[in-house]
Image (cartoon, rainbow, N blue to C red; front, side):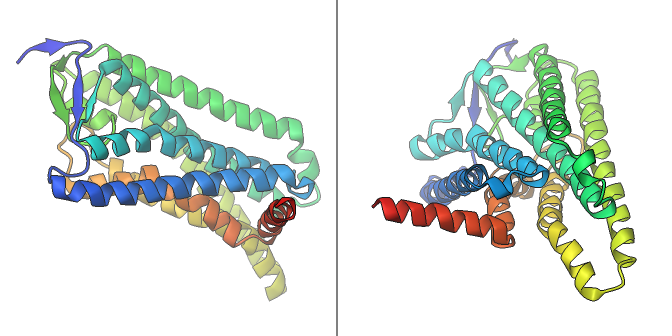
Length: 309
């Protein structure tokens, strides 16, 4: 077969059965619009209420911004493919989509770790918390996360850009992920795969270690609190974050806990849908439904809109 360093691809999407495309289009569109509106409302709620201008909500606003962008990276192209039946995508378009997909996925990973550190500082060192999590340090943590995510995503994209691929081949996925792309390569992908997997493992394990060690210290501190009410109050500030962490890492493990160059099953595609669309859509609702301050800010925004009408 002919090989090229910049071929055109065809995204095969979620199903080869055209009769299912309309159903999948409706589901994807509904989740996409719900995800956009949920994350946008959470950003507005945090930005509009001065009482929410704290380190915890600063990182939460960053997470909502990332999730807003994350679902926009894959969903529009998937909707176009389902609506028109045309999944063609250029190599540059595929590489660009993968770059931003990796960027926002890595940012999700890093921000969850940073938010765990913030909860550790708030619960284990409450008196020192204002000194530990100053606005300057919060900005450094956020900017550092963005810098690391951009750097890692750039390395991924550069590694893939050096490979040759079979021309006019179908990608057995609904977006350009590195596993399906490696399957279509004419080149020896062993080094590229090892470097990408190694970098992903270092980044993922480091973030997961921060989360696990932070919560180990948090639970140790909470169990030393004498009153049951004090324990519930302390754990209540972590419940939303823990829910998001479990949802995020369970879908990530289901999608990527195997060599990327092996064939992809339908179950992994479902896990990828959960990872790229469902999880970013649910995150703002998990945080807002369990948080009185966010719900209060949202009510103020809605009441303000009604008064203008």
